[in-house]
Image (cartoon, rainbow, N blue to C red):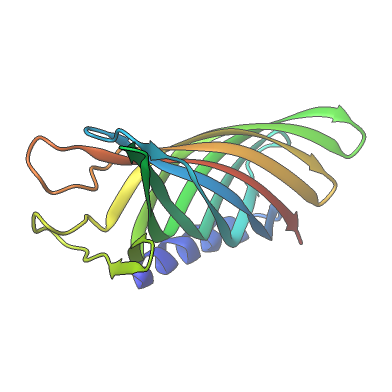
Length: 200
């Protein structure tokens, strides 16, 4: 699956590189993620990071298609108090993600642009772990009831600011894939990311 993601990204770059308006870059930033859906009482957001590469394919001066290939940490925190005792746990999920956003750029000053963007994303879990105090257990991915679905997909929406070759973005990722294999139990990724980057 990792090779599939890489081949998809290279294919997009190959098409884009035929046009002189393509720029490649690097990006990194912070995530705050959680799990939404059924029976998620006590679930809170947790911090993580993401890092990756991207291509900005300018179809016109103001409109671009921007694919990215990222390593992204997602998951959630769980906290519950009973009889004066607080129990905390964390779910850590490491994904390879491929978002493809359509971006519109507004000129706001010389060499400065405001970006608004949206598009789909697909992700594949590379690893996962549940931690609660000294207890730690790896997450098994697959299609069995006691396993977690590795495939994730959803939608992005966000805004950004670009000055010459530097940019910063704020985006929300809404997961649409069900991570759970149990009947009548739906859980989805939810993620807010703040990233910065540079276009070469």
